[in-house]
Amino acid sequence: MDKGDFFKGLVIGAVTGSILGILYAPKPGEETRSQLKDRADYLKRRMRRKAMDFNDEIEDKYEVAKNLMDEYKDIEPKKRQAVKEEFKNCIRRIKEIAEE
Image 1 (cartoon, rainbow, N blue to C red):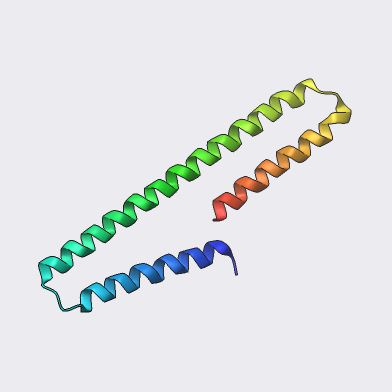
Image 2 (spheres, rainbow, N blue to C red):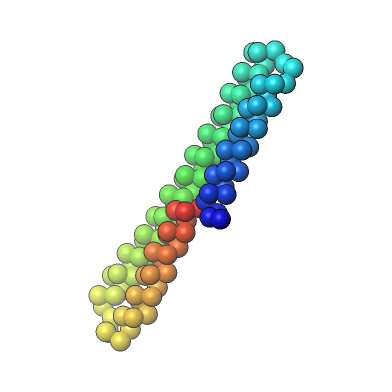
């Protein structure tokens, strides 16, 4: 099972369970709506934070790749293979991050 799929399922299950639990709890409608709004605001902040972290990490990896390419132009052909491998590792890590 893919980690991304598991995480998505976990989030969807948690949200669904929270909503159903709140809706079926014996509370007044206004209080229930307030709880739903608070939970939605919390999830929105959390997802925004995750997106910002993801963006920061992608920017860092982009800078590493850019620096490697600049160095690549200036090195001997023998050493280029090591640089290619490092670049491939950066690309692989970016893909892993995107799948999380």
